[in-house]
Length: 390
Image 1: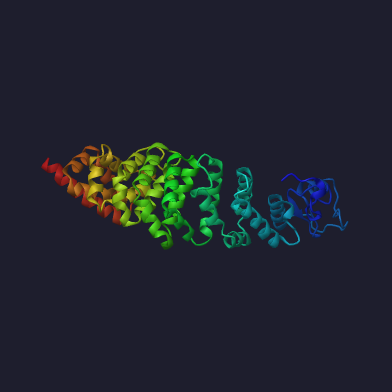
Image 2 (image 1 turned 30 degrees about the vertical axis):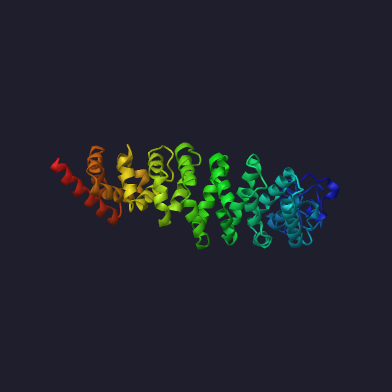
């Protein structure tokens, strides 16, 4: 906010420069100044408080976080903010911003400015601000704006910012408002945004899925999302084609996979192939989670077949059996190999050709858990038997 000096509340002015306090600090006398100004005063050899002229028995300065917070509120909310009554000012200002977003007469630019202010306020981890956002029902409003019909997909800046705010509001209270996405037209918009949105939009939507999977209030929504062939396909496409968002897409797949009723749909949508491609890539920060997701899917015959039929499926998992940088993956990788090698001769042959025997021996000599080593011994026994028969 660009404010002339005349509009700066006296409380927010530095007594030395009369300018807005940028970094307020307080002396032992209780007087507050801008850090740069008071430091110059003290460096000049002055050992008194500029306002009271009291001698300073302690020249140290202490940051005034409360005043800094009030100034930030004033800068964000504008002239409606009253430093003498900040809580009422915050509620009134947020209510005004909400009316702006709700109004059909408000221009998109005005709505975007309102969103920017809301985003700044939501960054302040203040319990009062959180209660205001809950009380004023911002989450359902923003969900309606993004997935309803009020904003076109062409207005991607607005959608990006609204989704960032939604992410901030999700941990504050009930996730029940997310259930509006179950509606046919809103679900279609969700899928369209996963397909055509920017990286920021795709990331936000993947995180919405992750949040939804964490609450019993949104179990039905997760079932609908996980059984939407188009949505699953688009998430897998993000894993395959967009390394910047692929980690978040892996988290979304894992979140959907936590519901058994979604797993067949995920396999049909290419989750196994997408995860294998991700694990074998250079940017695989979510590899441990990805391998654990494959392990969950191994209860399905279709998932086993998809893994064995994948050109690099078994070989990729062999590479995860013993890798110093990915120790978390070892147990899941061994478990998955136990399953497929136990059922498919081709999987056993490929695993042996890929060097799994050496990796298992190294794993047994490592600091891995007893549980992991026990599974490794079982797999080693199975594969040695195969090797002898060959």
